[in-house]
Image 1 (tube, rainbow, N blue to C red):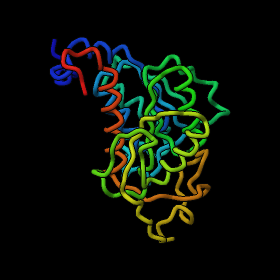
Image 2: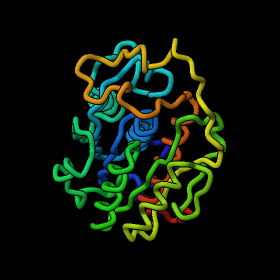
Image 3: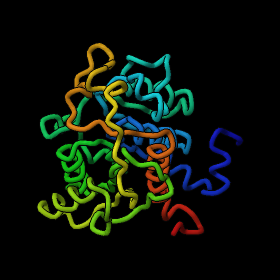
Image 4: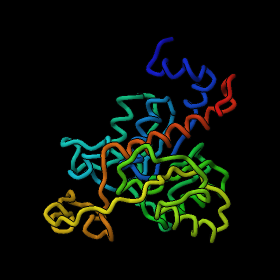
Length: 258
């Protein structure tokens, strides 16, 4: 029967689509990267999504986040993402958590429920906690490295964390993963050296904060405020979604995905 996933089914087949429909994926961080992960998973027929982010949509998100429009400014990102998923895939089960993921909040989540975990947050402590919890219960996890201060979307690739280079965040994550005995981690990273943002105080959030009322973590409190584009975080998110879909569908297609 023709449905919104028919074009995907032409490539993956019935069994793979059933596998996707029965899968639950947790996406930690619904920003420039995570928003596009959610978008692609919903459009691919994943049956259940857990969306975790405590942030609200800000005017400065519009340049890169698929959930950000002038109509959604001030709304919680997970609420906007849930509404969007339901418009795309009404049967998708969505659970939202207005939570900033850190060791102190990890007890809210049972990683054994997930078929795949996405780390799309930007704090090292939170990233490591997500990765450790996923590894502990044997759930596949994929992690986004730095997408800010980059202008070349073609420079991103999928690799094990220990085979990465150039990316400053990947360097920190290699060191911390090694300390914790994490022997492998699938990541998406860029070999492009970071571009140094302009020091223009007239457009800096440092002096012109416009975070929505009630924002828990304002950008004025951040150590660095990276520059960003529409075409870099989106590519990272779509690469991650592609890895998830192809991994989940392995063994459910006659022609195995390499």
